[in-house]
Length: 142
Image 1 (cartoon, rainbow, N blue to C red):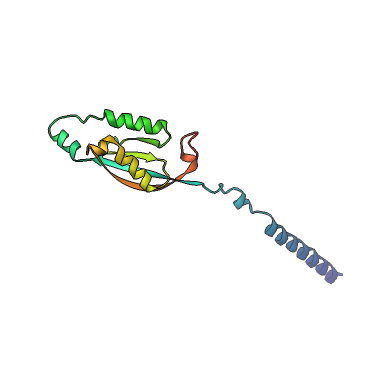
Image 2: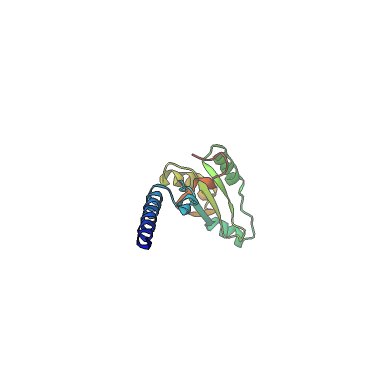
């Protein structure tokens, strides 16, 4: 009788194990269910600007740089949806401008058209940036 009980118990355990394995292969794990959704990346172009020769010469002579044309340009680019955001670094070493553009050549053309670049107040390095689309300002998703 004891032998028969052991056989029945092993059979029940075997059925239970098979059922658990089948369930674990068809159902997502609890860990997978808690993972965040995949990140959607958007390529934007980050221009890191630094003081150019005119800026440095003006500073050495104690003159302020006239930034009015630059500010008007960036307001227009922002209104047209080409400039996402930008501003100076608080340590005085330059700033950051982030553009929406079709490619790096178009972003370079935007920077080259900036009066501060043309007047050599700024120099810049331009980089494609894979920004998380969720980090774009509200309403800026492409």
